[in-house]
Image 1 (tube, rainbow, N blue to C red):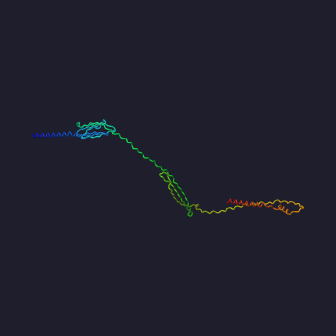
Image 2: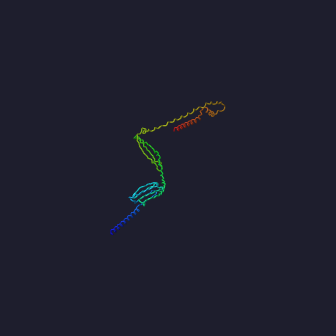
Image 3: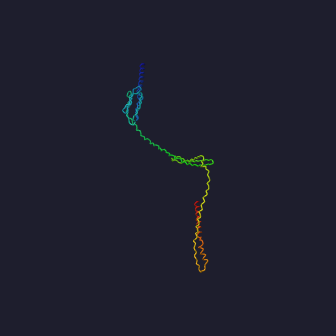
Length: 286
């Protein structure tokens, strides 16, 4: 009886333990296998986790009718499959075969295309305004003024030449890009040389020149006084009348004497003409 009781008690305990193991074994796989298939516009993600490590599980992935994966796995299988073109929809199928049928997967779907990228207009870049290079005009020639002064020293028989040079250059006005006159620059240079004979010749004082004596024009000679022809006195026929002495004397003087009244004015005129001629000659020489 005791043996029988122990046997029954042991049998019952074994049954309870076995039932617990069966319950645990049946419940654990149902919550452990985690298949996950997700798709985006970029691709498909297959994540199979917590599968039996020793079981022969298989997975097949088909995208747009083309098999991209066909393999077996143990405890887990995780892969991502990117689409070639993200702007269009893609069809995909994932098939998972595990022992039994409880954890098999056979799903098909279509992805959503990614939105077309926004064509961003490139920013308008305004190129910098390049100013033309400044062309500097050619600088004019400087202006030079040279002045030389000789100082002759006949005591030392030397000549000192002082040369003064005034140079007016140019400076660039960057604002107007033009050349303007600079401040004049003065340089002085002295050179000494021997004096020549001509530079130190003793000057002879000029000799006084006596003006020539003007010849006095000769006084024209008075024309000879030609006495008038002798007049034959008339023959007086004596008469009986008384002779008048006074009348006889007066009538005889013109016949016998010289008449010089016209010669005196002529001589005075000639003297005046000679004096005037001398005065004219002196005036011309002066």
